[in-house]
Length: 405
Image (cartoon, rainbow, N blue to C red):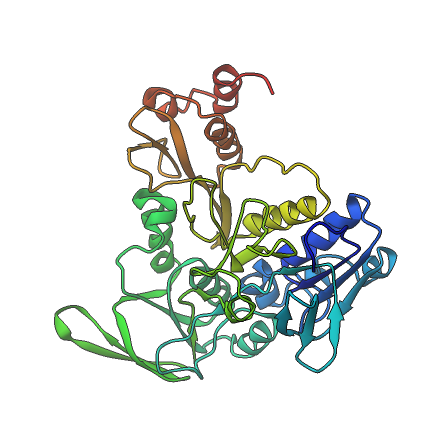
């Protein structure tokens, strides 16, 4: 791994969406060198279905693969079922956990994250990989009791999937309405109400003691409630392990620090996906992206950087979630300083102090959200009246407000 030399071989540590995208984009852009993906689960697969269709048994393991197995042979991408135990940028090698070394001109760290465990309760199940989903599915039978600690995106999606299977679900969270920073209070409140409307019990409180089959919750005014279950699931977020990068002398700060091109302080080492944290040219460290599209853009940026190609302009941040038969999306920032404008109950916009559109959250309003995303990307100034008026077509508003591409 030496700066200034042409890249003839790339090893990607991690087979999630970011790592797979690096390999795919290298080949799509004509890279003819060696490409390897090292991942303990082997052939890369998509994770969003794990809390929805795959968990429900409606989608097979083969269906969630990011590419058919033949694609790897056709594109000369070697998949090594192992993990990287040590990175040695000076010698240009990675050491595999099961033994052996791989020499590469460039290494991409895309190992993602691990599901955060409940304090003092490491045996309580989590949902992060296919094996977790397979194990949890075995408990999802009519009449079974499931307690989910954490009502964020994953917890809410599992609650929806499990309740549809006839499971008696209890959802525990310390905040009155989860996801307010991501969606704004109005849309978050609509979504949170859906739990009890669909028969899911919601308990506000902090878990203080948890086992595989019970959770003790501290509620308001110091009262305690014990919830019994056939299985408890922890859905309280994601942790990233920066040990591999730190031991190689790379800067870390709640993630592996990279530039907009995914490059670390070592010009032959990159990071992408949940693990990466971007430092902007002005020195600002931005929050790690933990959503599907963020991983996709990271992987694309790294591949293009490796090939010396210009980086594409990133669109405003976007994520989605599905629960109880509705599709939720958000773009930009719903927590930016400013004011919120509502168009009905299922569509919210965020305007900054200059009336510039900076965020949008929506339930089953995909066309409106896509138009809003265009407006956000263009820095459009939009009147609150137009945003609130259902008669105003946002797509036409985007055409009128933005210069032609």
